[in-house]
Amino acid sequence: MVSTVLVPIDDSERSNETLEYALEVHPDATITALHVVDPRKFYSGTGIEGSITTNYEQIQENYEQQARALLAEVEETAAERGAEIETEWVTGAVARSIVDYATDHDVDAIVMGSHGRSGASRILLGSIAETVTRRSPVPVTIVR
Image 1: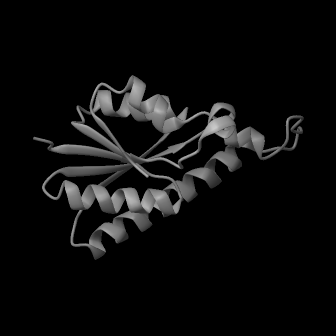
Image 2: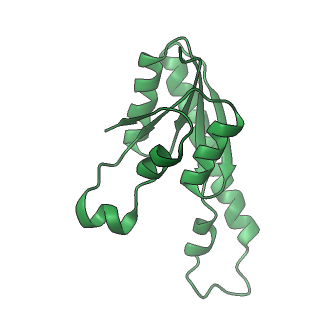
């Protein structure tokens, strides 16, 4: 029996569909929506050179504000469906952070979306869903 489910969330439509799927399939489980703030974005937004005036703390704060806003929307979506969920955000490499969270919080299952890339784009861009599936200590359901 699945009593705790982790649902990684980003700002994509697929992510919303994944949350809805988790709420439908696991109505009695404690569902945690997790958003991962990837620190590589702090630097990529400023270009590889960066500058002395670049304020990385402000960039990080902006991403964290976006994470809080996203998770507030997720809570609202769940409430519209009559469900309560927990929300968390962490900073780190996305796939590793998802797996680490599942391990550290004794999650029973992970339900996550996949963007469905194939061929060269999957090889070049990698697949977070694939990496999580390979490294996860618990079952992973991929919603496509």
